[in-house]
Length: 334
Image 1: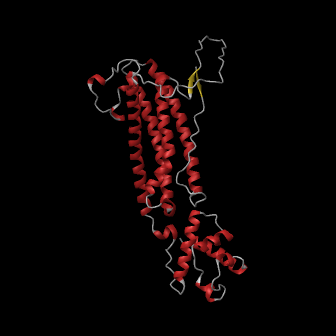
Image 2 (image 1 turned 30 degrees about the vertical axis):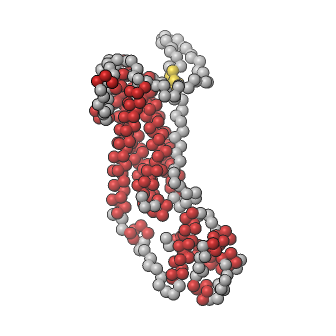
Image 3 (image 1 turned 90 degrees about the horizontal axis):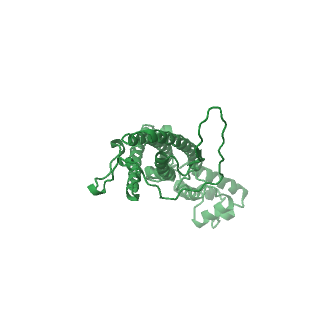
């Protein structure tokens, strides 16, 4: 009888996400979706590993590797599909928000996926152990119960389970027979090739080689799936007319004072990109530090006297309303 413990939380944290940025809600939504879906895939894959182990135990030695890699291939394909879908969502956000993602949206999206990829690589190792041995850190043997028809039996469940030693697992010899569809191991010298027709455990070096191959093949397949998703989304984005995305791009207003307005807008956008919550007196203080110019119309109408600072202007109720409006307009016109 085995005890199935809950999987480790796969809650992911996106990287390179400035606090309270315009992409924060989208990234949090993607993280929540990816976390839930990855947990579901992990749980289904764990059950598949237990089924694979049951079949492997009763199979002849020459069929064990085939059973193992058949189940592993199915679990790996499901994981890659889920991760590629998460990458697709991150990449869409990057294309829609170039100010946050920068000039390399593909790298930005990949950085946000790293937490999930790391969890998956670790999980694959645990899957290998569970399918081969029937237990790992999450699933442990409790004991055996003889089957007697009509008889009720019970087995005490310990609340404390001794953890398995880290990096102590040794793969069975038959696992060295790698399926052609899952990759290849670099040719070894004859004296270094283990006998694969036995239940004996491999050495630590051979076990590391098998797990390294598992990581390499997984990352290669994931990279191919991500490239396909990226190409599809890039093509889709290129097929959308610019007017459909943000309407016709407004040309700068060339009336007198437009350069002053654009300079002020750039200063405001730069400030709010780093700190979107900046407002009020603190906002004006930052504009003073950057020597941001007032609008030409304010000076023309005599509302902004020579030498007036932004902090001083904030104390004028009329200018205070104008400063709030300019702050909003600057962010809308990006």
